[in-house]
Length: 567
Image (tube, rainbow, N blue to C red):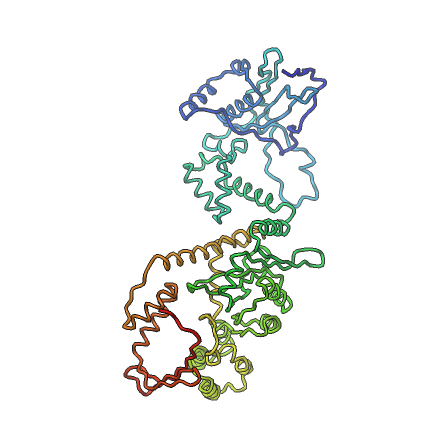
């Protein structure tokens, strides 16, 4: 055994010395095999006399500390470590523990003139209660050399002992559970309720709500490390190692702070190349700590479900910022531009799309147009007709006639907004988009749906790295929905109900279940049509038809056969 020098004139105080209220708290207690053993241990402590305590010996310093901590818990007072004395080689030879109310707050802390916050309540009243043990070299035991039982204050009531700070601690297993729940988006208040239910109440929990919030805040600070932006960029760098197709790009301000951030993982990039002919995006969502506009590029997959292609956090909504994000999007997607883009009508977006995606057809969100019309106009009758002009399936000539009639009828020929919207008619009127493919996307509602969905994952107080993690969890939910739809398509067969059985069978094998149901409704409607004329010129088939019993309304369908579908 290493020789320990006991001369007290050679010892030094360690970091366990306390100043004012910054004491080190002891925690834990004697290890027991069960509730019965623990109850017996407590009973023995309560029956100890002063002489019994002075005669105690311990095998280690830790055992002595645990004893006095448990002693304090049994007699309703808090315990903290006080002086410690070490030998020349740094080995502890004397350990003293005191009541948590020992000592007094230094006068300089009471008379501060620059205080901003109100002072904390006083907890020290110079209580004399203490317990000291000393290592005996000859016996190899730790013996009690001082025990002062008396206190100069009222002891804590039994039903409040669990609130004493020295008896509060979050166990390692509880920390692991808390961290796991937090990572998966469970709110702190809900974590507290869950653990209260598991433990059976506050008395058995072992910590308070404040302790829980402090632990979560500490874990967040550990994750953020040198800074929120640095943590996010480091995470993206690590992610690119595990996902070779992961893409991220960012800009900085003049003072080297993070400005704009764009990212897309490998799955999203592959999804774009499969389903990226039509892209919808807006920047209305700002549920993040920095109030930055969140831009989500999304579209529909082969199940008619929302799929996310990329995401960006921007510093503002200027045309130059949108140009940067669209250029970055094109770079990320190997310069494959979308054929059509649907946005909410922001002028900065419109300018950026015109410059970066000049060949893409830009469609304005029908819902946003209607909401703007309600704000700009007070003619409810015109609004009804305007809504019909947005969605009605008609040719351009009929649209022009109906628009002119409506404007004249409600005397809106000189209305600035009406004239402005007429100039943009090719961007919102269905009559001018009959020959264009928009994947049935007429509004940015899918973006709004994503924004609403991620509210259950993302909190406004989230740091940037937490925001990214939680957003990824929301994306995983969308991808799981696609997986479920793939499974349904693969392992189920649709019920055939139309008289055009061969056509129905062919499409059921070609399409996913969701898409087949939509086509099936069209097949059913075909059964109600009567073809009156068929002609073919240069590979283009012309069909004249009308609905059954509706002979006065004739439809002309032009069909250019470019491939054959093998049934």
